[in-house]
Length: 208
Image (cartoon, rainbow, N blue to C red):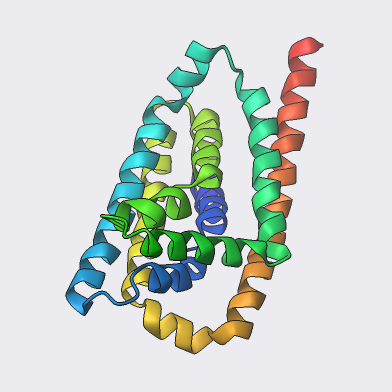
């Protein structure tokens, strides 16, 4: 159970990348008073956590209603996560997140805690796919409770990073952020390939 919890935590942490979201938070909240920034920093992770917890609880039921097997979702989710890791390694993801944050600010979004910080940055396609994959492996019972605890833990880390965003950005600098993004991207690429391998193995087992 401990190995399962650790693996789930590391996987979701790599996908969400709380430290990497700090510059996007600063971009989205540019010009806001400090009090409003703190409110957004607390609210955005709570919204993202709510979305991912619902996905963890109801995602498998939804897949069954759509007639999608867990192995198929493992393969598709692994490919999607590999795409996220590719963007992290080759530097596209930070630029894309900054563009989304700038777009939200320029359009005077009514609540940047919802968009773009909660969706699609924190609870984005990669995080949703990962939560579905993990909850599919967990089933119901104690392991599902572990997945929910993992989701809440990662979102709590996002909250801490948002609150400390200014300090993190200054500490890491441009080079530090780039190095961190690429190292995490390599680890995520390995996890995504493992998801695909597990899905293929499950399909071969069901056909044999």
